[in-house]
Length: 287
Figure 1 (tube, one colour):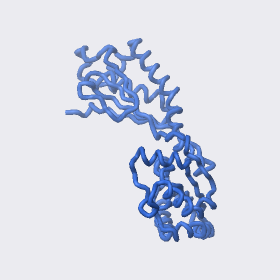
Figure 2: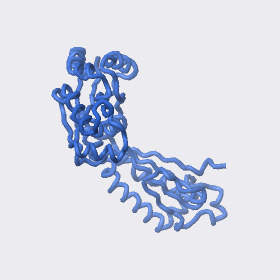
Figure 3: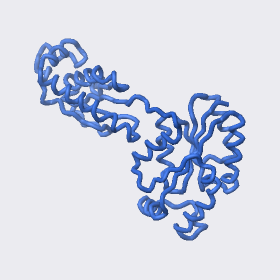
């Protein structure tokens, strides 16, 4: 078998869910709370499906103590089959974990048998000691932001990790149909010269050459386009470096037919050398 396996473990509240989410965004097949006893058959099944995709599993105190104790020997056996594995241990100071539980109001998996949250966290550390002792990498998340955790876990999971080209999604829309609410930046193009008021241009949209020629002849349109492209080139790499998988720019005009479409298409041409760019025109197919 040629799979690469990452085991993510840690005390409850240390950031395991965020870590698995970052790995999933990076292309890993992620399985949380997988019983150690079914690890090998699961990996065999995944290899049959996609041998190139790395796997990350979350194993922690929700599993049986026998499973936790057996994990190091199970991973050793996987190594004999050619499966490269790595254990990443996440933890934070006990006061920090307590504060996180109070903030999220989640229940610790060992609370009912321990009587108090402090005791549950101490018991959990003892239970997971076999994993702690065999961990390849340790990450203290006490003072890490969510973005820092996401970026850090990718480097720990794969020493050769190289982030892919940042993804930029461009969306044109019409303000009269509502502003999209799942975007990162919104730019207003309604102040630019409007082809709609040119009778010969009204039937066209921003992908048609007559509209392209009209808007390309307006200095303010080209300046605005240049400013947006410069902002994207300056800040998208920084945003993606924090663990975000992509950045979405929405550009709106009144109806979403001319100016916003033109700007989105032109931005795609300006940015494609730096990023993986996709474009969607929300209003072009509107009845």
